[in-house]
Length: 409
Ligand SMILES: [Zn+2]
View 1 (cartoon, rainbow, N blue to C red):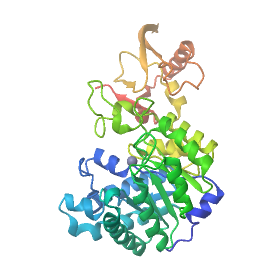
View 2 (cartoon, helix red, strand yellow):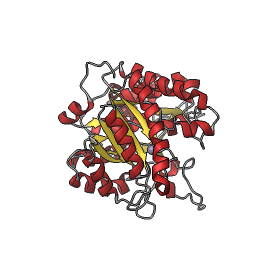
View 3 (cartoon, rainbow, N blue to C red):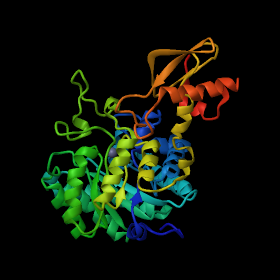
View 4 (cartoon, rainbow, N blue to C red):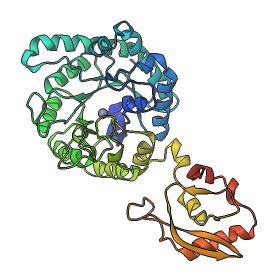
């Protein structure tokens, strides 16, 4: 058991919302440390610093929980990549890394077990034995290294989730058990998602809910039903992708040429940070207790969600200061090795001032994330720019500039 003086998960939930952050495997694949396909977190042993860095980024962005990267670090998956002998070392080190970073803030450490692909409802007795042994060995190592609670996640089968719950409870730890809602209404073993959560709550899960597969739009209605049905804590960790009525899950999204976008071509479907922040706000308004993000998650989402929940987090120090962008709206066309703002466009109008010509900047359309700021006014923008010119100091060394502008070369 982890020797921590900070409050445990249940005390924190009692006091308010706990924020989570996941999607480690997806993000570390994007960063070049995990192979897509098997998705085994070999990075834990091969590049531990990369894992710590991502933990740290999530911590700074507001996650209250460092989830040990043991997703798919189970016997079945390690066999696939020929690293079965690394099983124990990988599991122990993942928990150690989570602990190291958790101590840098006031975060909890969650042990993590997941769908095993070994469970077979048609051969429940035999496959349950295999699954149980996998969970027991993973969690025994996790407990020895120190965890505060366990997240059993991405469960396709209620039967498998129940085995996870039993093992967690045998170890005397708080249990968060969340389902992967990959099918329209029911788990793969045929239980309505709401009923499955009810059963998990009835069997002693402290937190139940959903993670992965669905984006906010298609996860929200289900979570609303679960929230109004169970009396225990509820967790929601959607993926930041635009799933909808036609495509309930990110596995079903299609690229423009009809190919499956999951898992490597999902970028066109990403939500922006403001939309994920809106999900956090909505989830909080209906009483969801544990709010996070799953595959596709990244620190900028986590920070935006934290701030939407009323928190100021370490990374808030560098939260957008769009008034700086306002000051840089009109960049000289000539004479300055200038840069274009990344997220704005230019009108075809120009203005002449003191014999020099300037492009006039305009804000983007309704999708503009800054639409809540005061309406852009070209005259005001030009006044600001003229003031800069009068100072005869080119704004190239402006401190804020480097963070929001991209060199046009
Ligand atoms: Zn996920």
